[in-house]
Length: 227
Image 1 (cartoon, one colour):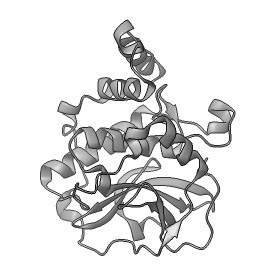
Image 2 (cartoon, one colour):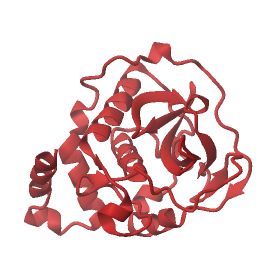
Image 3 (cartoon, helix red, strand yellow):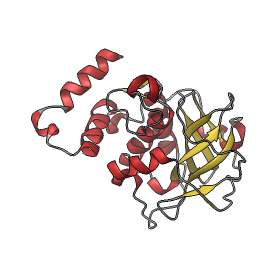
Image 4 (spheres, one colour):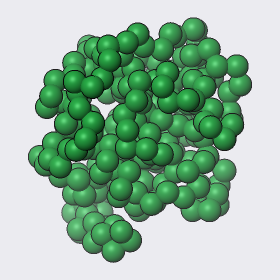
């Protein structure tokens, strides 16, 4: 896998690519690795028909953003931009579902999990795993980037902070769909309804502003710095 990441880096770091801003270099890298045209191939096991239609998580007011998210948005403004003209929900068709499943699996396989402390010697940093290494939020940000490139509405894909099975802060990607809120997670390839993950849901990005909203969880972590 390190070899694959190294090959990717050589492809995207040609002279023309090096002149791109950091966020656009990340986009070029991501597209080179995953190939948007082929995202719907190789989908296995989990089917759209198996998903129940359920209510989404209930928003309960404003919430304070994670500090590392604020810094991320300063560097990658396009990744945090919100277009209220986009659909607020993803309409799940067989083709859309196949793309979601494929992106989730491919990113989970391609990115090497490592905490920011071990990788970058900082407590928490959000990015797009440009070097092929990242922790939980980096997986999810890259998934959203690729899904948005594939045509899914960014407004319906919200970064979300939870407390996981270890009692630690963790980041997942919530897809707000016409079948309910579904969760993409780097700990599993299964795409689960939010209330079947076993996590305590704390807060997520707003669908109406570049801000965060509460999901009712009692304890909000300061960081999401686990793998």
